[in-house]
Image 1 (cartoon, rainbow, N blue to C red):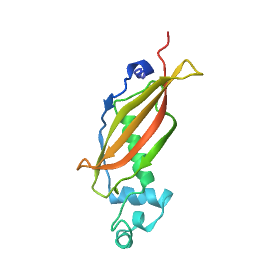
Image 2: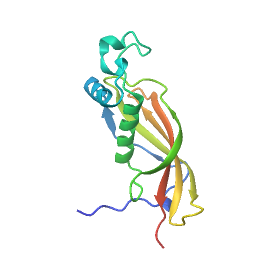
Image 3: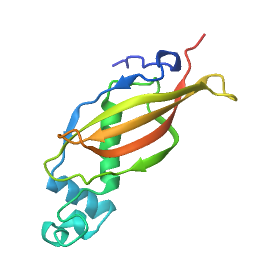
Image 4: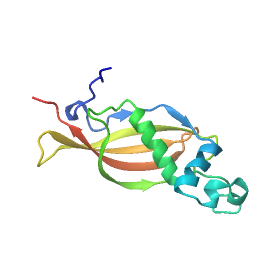
Length: 152
């Protein structure tokens, strides 16, 4: 099976937006992630979570980030060579993710610049906003990606 070519740096423009599919969050997925990576009561047990800051079971922010990454990779953005991260900034979780939430992602290109030292790549900054089913943001992040330039 041959892979369809992705987009090159020159195929993007500032302000361009991309959507995604959806992911449905379940209590089982929240607890499974928490057991392995973030074993705190508000991620593991509904009853224990009631008496915490979250007043109920909530996904770990890192679980939300992982689900966002899946939505991002599966979205229509498709840089050639894959999603190669070079860092980022401003990761926030403005509200908790709960069982039953249906998440989707909007990504927007916020900055493009050719690399000063590597002419074969460009640097693309983005703003990723993950929304729940009510279109309330549950995660906002600003990653920086390395994107190949079109071969000459």
